[in-house]
Amino acid sequence: QVQVAESGGGSVQAGGSLRLSCTASGRILSFSTMGWYRQAPGKERELVARISTGARVVYGEGVQGRFTISRNKAGNTVFLQMDSLKPDDTAVYYCNAGLRLSGQWAEYWGQGTQVTVSS
Image (cartoon, rainbow, N blue to C red):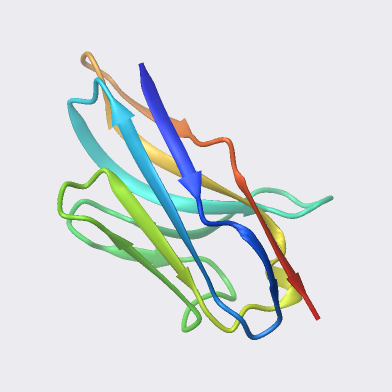
């Protein structure tokens, strides 16, 4: 009933840029905070950035000033512009969406998109 679909991952050299997109679709009544998390091999999943419906933004450690999160007016798509990428940014990036379907709020995750930064 609900899809959270990411796109835009890939491979880039250090110092390069990538733009990730995530769209939540389906029988959705309302949207809440959406964001990006990442998980590198052998590490825990960590917050990259999240944005509320009121455009309040929170960035995780080490990305502020290099990454920019934004959201479309409809509220169902979130973007992550990643500049000045470093090898340490290599991870699978997951989209997270707070959604209300028939009556309850819940968090939904995308399948993940691989970002690889080479030195």
